[in-house]
Amino acid sequence: MKITKIISIILLFAAMQVFGDLTDGDEASVTELQNLADPLVSSEDEPQSEFGKASQSAKRKMEESVAELAELRKQIADKTIPLTRQLNDLEEELSEVRREYQETSRLLDTRTLDLSNLRNEIKARKEEASYISNLMGQFAVNFEARLHIAEIQRYKDTLEHAKTSPENSNLSKREVFKAQSDLIQESLEGFEQAIGGKTFHGKAVDSTGLVNDGKFVLIGPAALFKSEDGQKVGTVEQRFGSLEPTIIPFANEQNKAAASELISNESGRLPLDPTLGNAHVVESTNQTLVEHVQKGGPVMIPILGMAGLAMLVALYKWIALSLIPKPGKRKINKLLDAVESRDPAKAEKAVQSIKGPVGKMLRRGVEHIKEPAELIEELMYETVLDTKLKLERFLPFVAISAAAAPLLGLLGTVTGIINTFKLITVFGSGDVKTLSGGISEALITTEFGLIVAIPSLLLHAFLSRKAKRFANDMEKAAVAFVNQVSKTPVKKNDLPEKVKANA
Image: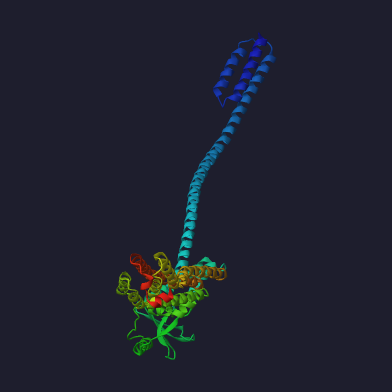
């Protein structure tokens, strides 16, 4: 029994030790274990003092352990409170840091978005600046094209700087923009001055090619110039092939005096050309026939030669056909009446009064009137054929001229185009003025080819018709004579002695 009680007490102490480690300062549990152990100890007889000593020792150790546990728990509690407070402070600091992080993140996102928008804005502004720079470059080109020839020398430096600055890699974009904006500023000032007219000094070329220093007056599109010596006064225009303003002197002395006074005093009457110089330009393009022909090139030689020969032939044939005697119907009817009345003498007399090829043909018929009608017809037809050949002589040349002249013009067109392409190979296609020579050659030869062909064709048709009409009249007279002979044959004994001898 004693051993059992001792074991129970030991188990209680062990349980107390275990519960002491797991429990956070539960004094009630320890007291309860002590109360359970006391009856066991006190209820037994203690004959032996050693057991009591052991029990007291164990109890004392238990109390010391409990005290030590309490002290330890107190120390833990003392340390836990600052640590807990520190933990709370750290948690609050962590929360603050998290809030700052979130705010910083939001700010960073906002700034990232702002930076992206700023980059897009910068890109858009760069594109806008590039577009504006291109517009100002185009303005420089258009401005130069619209300037009066007298004003180009005034804006020459600014124009050149504005046009070349975009291609200069040594200049910054700001400097390029400034060069272009300077041109715009000067152009605006020039437009304001142009409202009431403006004057400036410059140079102009006279008709002899000499450069004269003087003063310009520009009022709208009208420009006047007066040299420093006052000798050269006139309007200013741009002549073909010249890059300098050209002085067109006034033909009227009153206009010259008025222009001189206006330029000198900057007030007075303005001699105005309503055509704005176009009259002088048109006049300068006028050329003589010889100059026009010379621009056609070497092909013009055969074209003009053929034209001259065709005109001479046509004139000759027209005169020749017009001078051929044409017998009237009365004379032919008189001959037919003589043949019908079987009066050879009268027929001979009547045929002698008929002149020209018709008379020759009828005389041959009268000479062979004793022959059969078929033979007379053949003899007279032979005369008609011979006359036809004479009438149509040289007419084919006029027809050939009408057909060949356009071909020669086409040949000139081809050679002119070839020369144009040669000029394009050398000078390029940028300057049309350098190509005008070949184009003129191509067009002028075609022009003269048609000028020669159309009249030649009409003349050939007219002369051919005239010759054919005369031949038809001969055939008609021959048929009438043969028919009359067939109806009233003449005996050989009735013919005159002269006709008999010829027979």
